[in-house]
Image (cartoon, rainbow, N blue to C red):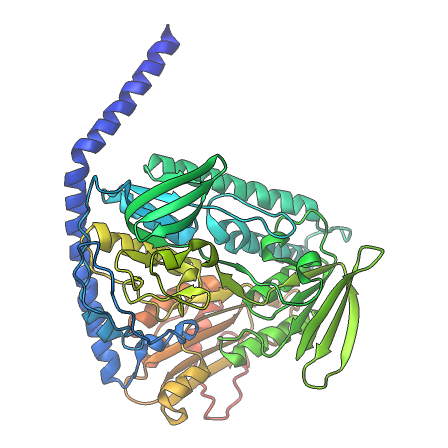
Length: 598
């Protein structure tokens, strides 16, 4: 009887909460809308003032300062559909002019309850899509989220949460941490710890631990969507017409209509078009759940994914080799990129430069024979590996969407949007890695999705600013940056108008184990005259992401070299090295420090 009473009381509380939510949702939405409107208008004015300051200082085209968003398209996309009762003028894409971007009017969406199954349908259950869906529900919208993962060629699949949670940032960082811990264990002997020389990693245990964590995040995500009243649909969605989706479910097909759509399907790794690539190679989609030790591994591709994977594989005791077709870390500052590669080579990771794979063949012993060619000399060579990992770029998942049925224009395998993440169809939006010419980073997708939902359903006006987005490459010696690379600063402002402050440094924790400090380096790319605005900051060393995050906020707020030099550093830290910068490349002086405390 007591258990029934307990159940009954819980049921009553639940019903009361639901009724309270119903009665207060209008007031809550209105209140949130006002608060967000106030917040957004303030930030809008701050950004306008900041733009004016940048322009006065000679920062031409400041919206181009993020090196990873510099290829944003400039073509116009006409708003040709008017079936959403949104009277929007044709929209030009001012991606290279931040002030023009914020002067464009914000489209208002009037919710047409009862006309469609949902106010909003988000296609894609990754970071950007989920943040948009949850934010929209918080402001009173009826939302459904479709998510479906096609298995990889070797059968790898995963749950809700997208690339970051399942096969990207999270498992990558965990394996990077495992690698660093192995290094730290051996360094501990120098600090007086009695360490067993027989310590070695257990790949299967590591994979199991990583996968258990990922599954827990999948579960929490599903529960969070349920609690927030977002309907999760595990199905592959494709457009039937501009307001209708067909969702392929395990149990059949379902037709879904919505007033507004947000496409957030992201991308998947590419495979090269060579014999044996798909049959015998794997990608980062497979590595973090690989049931066998990777062994001797050929990593094809020298972007950040390839270098990060090679780095933690080396730290875990395996033998990675990096194959580079052209340059390392394309899109990043090339001086820093080459320092990253050199630091990896110093740790025993070989690089096959100017080389492309020709074929992959499986031998009788199960190992893989890879033939490759030097693109400069034409010399063909081969080697045998246990694993071949493709890290040659990613492809946007537009093929299954049937975007032609909705009239949505694409650019190759990406979707073109304007400064409000709107496609050429006014009621269809896109966020995250699927959009053309923007940084493919989880925090970018999350913030863009959240801001989009606030504009659609909370009366907000603030738009996503894709410039000056900080990022970190989690190689053994980490690299973090924000703002312009040195090359892009020169292109934008001219070599005579740029001053580069730089210096090598010695992390205190490296002293006792006598770790190499050869590649620990920082630099600030700045305006040469006037206020000496900082255009870009670059850091190579330990815990790079933790170091650069705070400086990113400073740079977006108009950081100058005098301010940086007049900031008192925290000693002894590596972050303080930015406040100690005083030597310029132009001076020709030696940037190597003589001591650590003076």
